Amino acid sequence: MNGNGKIAVVGAGAWGTALACVMSRTGSRVALWGRERAVIEEIEQTRRNSRYLGAIALDSGFEASVDIASVLAGADIVLLVVPAQTVGSVAGLLKSALPGDATLVCCAKGIDRQSGLLPVQTLSAMLPQAELAALSGPSFASDVARGLPTAITVAAENIALANKLAARLSSARFRCYASDDLPGVELGGALKNVLALAVGAARGMQLGASAEAALIARGFAEMMRLARAMGGRPETLAGLSGLGDLVLTCSGSQSRNFAYGVAMATGADLSAMPLAEGAFTARIASSIAAREKIAMPVTQAVADVLDGTITAQQAVMSLLERPLKPE
Image (cartoon, rainbow, N blue to C red; front, top):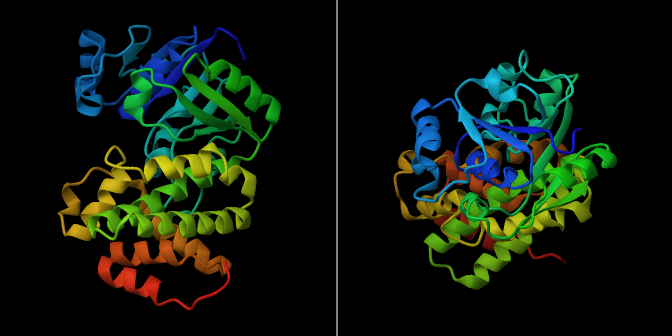
């Protein structure tokens, strides 16, 4: 891995564009790929991505292109920044163009709704020769793009690789902590979205701050149980990529999952809402929990509301009526 090599960012949505900005502050050459020509042309011509980041002025130190081969050429680090449900299809685009010595860092947060695989597991199946890692943690794209202080986790099975990535990806206001707990880091990023839906629904029903805090605490216990069953470590969930991201995502309006939860409870048209990964993750996580015989009542309640089998109000009552037991 070249200390001053090239970083390619695949995906020009809000998070991908923000990462291209912050990576350009590391001293590396940076190239951003997107499939939407209008978005890429606007970035190149005006240093704005108005569709995804509004009026935020973007750094000038990266190039943007719709030509994936040119973006990937010469890169020793590739950040894959696409929705979790599209990781497999985009990985297909990378097969022929990914440099053989590049490390592929997945920045998606979710669980594939068809296979039940985490993003890095999907990549491992499709690109078995690739060196893989994951980047996750409490970070709003607009904060990162504007250069506000952010701390995040980068994970790889090999801690030496994670340490190298942390050094390469960090800058003055973007601090990366290394981990060798890939499943723990990925599950934290995926499951917190489900709880953001629940807390958003509580906000929409005006249940109060006490109820929201209870949902966060009891939901976090569910995250810990499922992560342990899937090979993650509890201490990872207590860190940036678990608890840290959970607190941020449940904190208010910048979170798409939180806003989606509010809409769930208030009868808004969900089809008009932006993509909320938590809606996919709730269903597959509850299915995995049932298979593994893990109690995840908050996650199950969210899945039931999304499926239309109960209302948000009925979900609250079902949780309140559960038998009391020691914490």
